Length: 393
Image 1 (cartoon, rainbow, N blue to C red):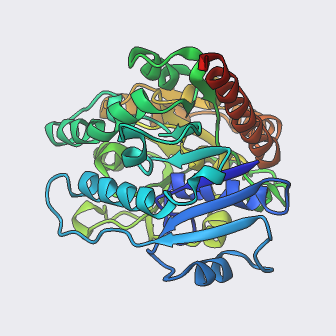
Image 2: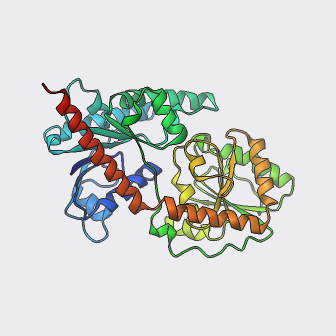
Image 3: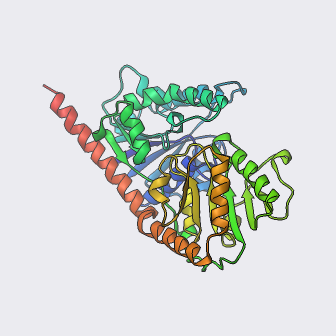
């Protein structure tokens, strides 16, 4: 099968969950029977040859070919990301128009196929899109956040309506697509996974002493909920609670608390983060909206259990056995949950950590995930050809 895979960046050139997901898909398709043309922007590689040499450690496989397209450089203004996304999607259309007929299916991440789908006439080739968590349709907890989500719906709504098929997480995320009028038979469930870097060697048993050791990893972005954690930590310090927390991600000095229990690390490499996770017990994820945050399963693979808000597909991974679910947007509930975790026995914590690790082993490994993704692509391509054949006189 010939696949065109359009992305707005891949890890490690671009940091982010969607970009890391794209990179894992590419690596697990390498050396297989499918030929994949991968479109990436020029964020870190000026040419396809340069991108390939930087991405592949042992040389590029014969069945994967990179195509580098310049990403629009715009000044920052309200909605600049949406405008840049449209311009980039138009460049993708223009670049591939002369060779798209060789594809069996076109697979696009995010808004990359916005322009391709919006054309009044396009080739009879099935298109499948992955918009991940559909956070733009999830509740907003601030006026600025509401405006941002309204802007993101500008491309999301027509993409959902026009794409032939769509990848979705299950649960509440799938419900969003159904409410947008997407037929259920065109929705394929697809999740992220962890690779051997996080799974092996198997994490050592946590000591789980008297001091609860939390971990928070996120960008300084409103929907990630650090403002709620900041307020909660201030109150825990005032209450002289027994805890420690390591915070990973760049933060301004005015959002840092000077206390021996709180350690700020800035951005870390994957290797450094993996080492830090060995010393922590519970991952905190107080997000206001999410899709399928890979930080959860990557942390579970290192033996952490998780306290996360009930958003996106988080409930598929986190339950009473693997951690704690918290109502989003409420600092009081976050504080109550952290206090409850602080008082949780070492044995109870260990049971949750073991359950979390086993869940990742059984449900979220990349080999099975990519095999399922390819199966979905093949099903979509076959279903589309049959539908087109039925429509012909």
